[in-house]
Length: 434
Image (cartoon, rainbow, N blue to C red; front, side, top):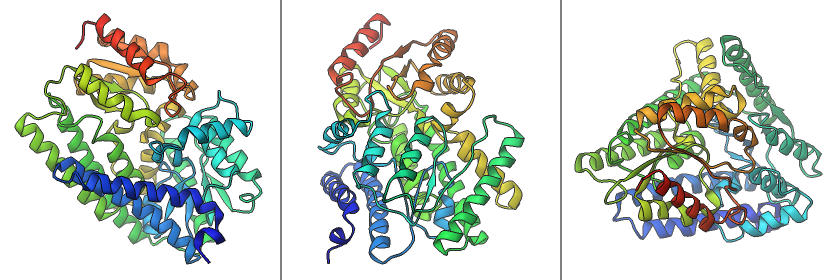
């Protein structure tokens, strides 16, 4: 019996795997370009993740549904594959059926004022399009939408008997919060051990964290290179790939270290030769949120070609991250708590105090010589929209232009790419840029 016949919930997962195999062939065909070689390696890591999940289902082995901000190095140390329940809207955003999925979610009764990423993830669960894990690690932060997704999951007929655990996030960024969340991570490990039969070997965890430290150190070196004018890379290679390798596909692996080494080498070569993503860099952008994954290829190349506007930094490339002290077990858990609760992108901004937005904008604008700060205003990120006034005032104090767009990162019908292009063009002209 074919795997998909026995596990119909894998139909979409397998189609996604096939889509990324197709994309890999496309990047391989352009392998004479160094950056495309690195893109191919990124897709190799992604396909390895798909293969491990499908292999676990086929061989009746344990695997997890979890999230990037729940210490994925632990899963590496325990040799447990994992996928994010919320991954499809981001990873499969370039596939032709995304708009149909959005419409299907609305037809299911999900309001179109709910964050599209949450809405799609609910749809994939309710429509039986998500792999059923051995156990699930639910996300209770950074926004109200995440717990809503998991309220749906625990009531779903196919998911309700799957063991679930959620780390409780404290609000403040202080020592007491660190100790508390470190304890939550330890409870999470006990839960995983109980339901998967795998035991966490502390030596293997320390090894994974040492690789992870190397990854984040190299990421820091890479971001130093992106400060250069012109920036060695734009939207096509950089923060999204760095994030996915460090937090998702290769968390705490030597393969992740190797990938970052190659990235740094490429950036160093471009800096040495004065090469950037466009012939003449005119505008340095800080895109302060997720990128518009649903229509990224219709918009970001246009910014570079039409305006010489280069994406130098975005929220998910917003380094620095805490290095983990593996010499002291108590401190190791606290450092791990800090990296995942205080440092992880979007969690850092949306969970805590509004001043996090202002502080990150100030640091990035100064460090990366930013000309324009873009708050895309994703319709689902209402927490951030409540802080627009603080962000605008911060930019005014820094004497850097700030633009608030208003769009949907996945559904290009909310604000069409042409409408967003027009708004950006008007803004650039008004500011005398480009």
